[in-house]
Length: 369
Image (tube, rainbow, N blue to C red; front, side):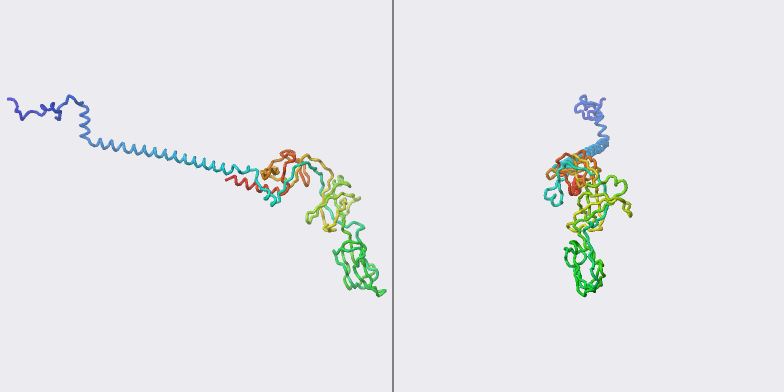
């Protein structure tokens, strides 16, 4: 007896809707069913896949952000440097080079900066010696008492300028009991007074020394082999040690013999002393020129400076002063020959060159920032 209708096997109805668990649907892939069934049976697969993908995406995002940030920093830094470079270029464009400076004419006058055209010069072969000032023979006199007696009046003091015939003192004669006057025999300066008011002057006693100091001798002491090179007729520049005032005269004679005390040869010249500032007995310096050599181009020593270990002069072009390296030749006490680096006629700073050097130094420091 066959089975009843209500007890039929579930698989018998499967082909109609393909909904049975074990029934096979002819239109479906069995592998897909197994995969789908496996996913339904193991929900952890979905969770693990989602958990694995999320950190990887986060890591990729972080790496990309870091790269973008680095590129942004570099770009900003490059932009800053470019901006600074443009700013510096704009600020320095109008500045003078590091070895020059700009000084206005008004500033130069206020600082005492003086320029002169470079040109020819003469380099002297000089010998520097020392000497003493002395009164010229025949230009001094002593004033003495003619008769003995007390001094009743004194009318001149040391340093006074007197004229020939001017009364200097009055003495009461012990012989005639009359007062007689003592007068200056020459015009000049009272160098000394050797009597006091009321003192008794002896006959022939020296009362005053008077000297005409409008001219003085300069006795120069020459030692050793220099004596062979120095002769009469050469120029000599005499310099006062007190204030540096100088006077150029001609050497008149070289005295025969040797000074006993110094074992030197004395060469003599005469200087003018109209202002009275050259004083007998004072020591002086002297430069005696024994030979001269022409120089096609020369500058005063006051124009020469050292910059970065090089000999330079400062050449002016308008209000710009530029340090110019020069090659030097022979020199004397006043100037130096220039053999290279400078052209005749160029304006060179000859006074206050150290002021220009200091200004260039400040300008150079401003460039280094």
